[in-house]
Length: 410
Image (cartoon, rainbow, N blue to C red; front, side, top):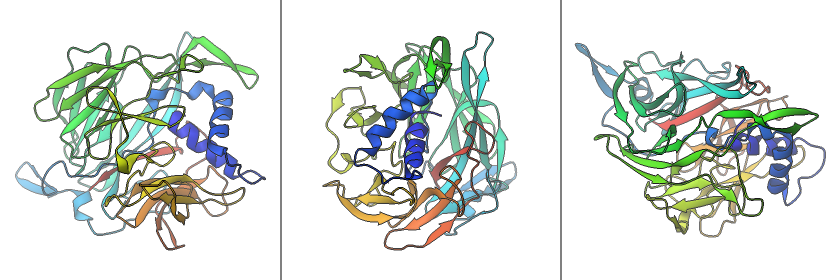
């Protein structure tokens, strides 16, 4: 479990307890979870969900051989596709502007020297059939807005090139060589307009934990990550040109240590800044595209992409807020971006992505389930109605039934 999964799972654990949630829940949960589950704090392994907000290319039609083939994601536009009997999903799930472009499962692969590597297996939407198919070639995958292409990293991170994957043919159309780096690429994400990538660089595999750095955890010893982030590069997708900037893993000034291997970086809401999660107040740092720390944009100063990955609404009028439930109930909230105060209380456990200006896709507990038996749901501001989108995940970490979604704008 990575940092984002760690914090979110911890909140859900607290929500299922027998006492009312305290005011300082998030801070206390993070501290406790760090102590109990420290082996999973590989910051660069963070990936909750990718929310993208603009189209990479034009209409959803690609030329394939002699005929034109319409993308499954485009053909379903305007439809709400649910598969409540499927977990992990087998067929396309989509609502509003968003579709489940891919998902991944994780497992810990033990090494001969007792190190461990958190290894992902991706299932990606086949744009011909509208079904998800396993593509085990990649250590890291992210889908562009428009869902025509993906950016991929090969096994054995960090790597020295980024692949551009055609989601119709499933072939890499070209490789973008990464030069002038300190280390190699360990994570990559698209800008909101799909024209750029931000590639986070490391001098070691950010998914690896080291037995030589083991610590006691729950009456046993477990390997730990080491700080290995070196910086980031902004990559032009069309030309392949990149601009690398040094940025070591964030160090907690109080304890003088980094949190995991070093958080991967992502673009902010309009792609003009870089967003970095940190494990202390205010929870994130905004930087310019050269890495210099800058003030948070006015509408994003209350965005927390760890606690609420959905972030800012498409019209910029609301911000997805954190868990707002109690001891035996789940709830979320949306905030006024100017004040950070609650604008509405909603159903759900965790707000993942905006389907439109009034509806969000979220995780929530399946009927009769426990806090980790959660499924994708659609919730609407101003309504108590909850629409199930998928079947429930299994509660066991790093199991085939514990999948993490990757959304993209269709």
